[in-house]
Image (cartoon, rainbow over all chains, first blue to last red; front, side, top):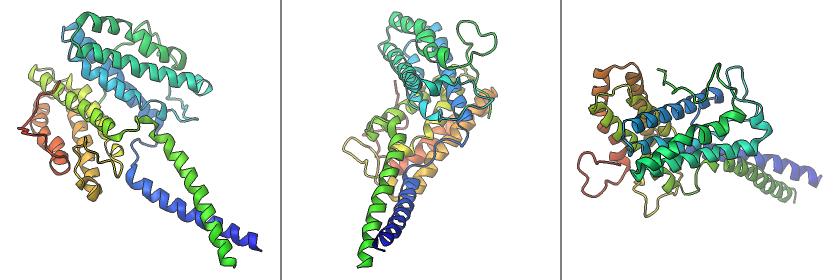
Length: 171
Length: 165
């Protein structure tokens, strides 16, 4: 008898607590992304590709310092990548390989590596050291993008070494 | 007597439920460094730098090149409100307490940045130089200012726009 009352209380308490918690988090943590993680991450990675293309164009034009903003954008975007790969989000439109979820810690460290390489590029650009910035940029495609794309992304058709700069599409 | 048992149960149930919620939401916050003031200042600095890059590109006639920076602003804008948890007003922060007193207005101001940045991006992608010019001319007031004026302590001696590196 007593146990039954405790049980009723547990259920009541849980419901009230969850209700309060969800209204509290509802206020302070609005949803950032849509309900489509594939579209969200493709949008995010397109911005990464476009930022990288912009950085390369600036470097070619000798505008070293201006590369910093793109590199920092990539570093900030890198912090958002793993949350956009929830388990089971592998649709037909996705180029993700199942290896992402099979080797999750490796995926996480590949993303972390990407963020660190972007910071390296940013710091080189901020120092206005053209040679140093070019040295980081030269390896960036392989060491930052490739270290994650090679094991974890299905290659685009006929892709040769570096991916062509991606264009932002109107939405 | 029975009431006491129900009460015990209520407390137990609440604790278990809240622990569960704490774990679930704890996972989401791993995106940040744990210091929301530093995180939001870093994000806003990059917004400022992207905005400076936009202005330079427009000045140089590189209208299409604006798109990447505008999209960065639009995506960053989605994260702004998350980086202002209640009680995160420190000495180093330029946030005004009005943020939390008028939370829905703050949310709308952040959303306004996202929308305007999206408009600028689409105009740049369409290579519509005239439209980009118009949006850029009013952006400081209509996108940055509508949030900074009510919700940020102004930097000392700030005149219209500050150069950023």
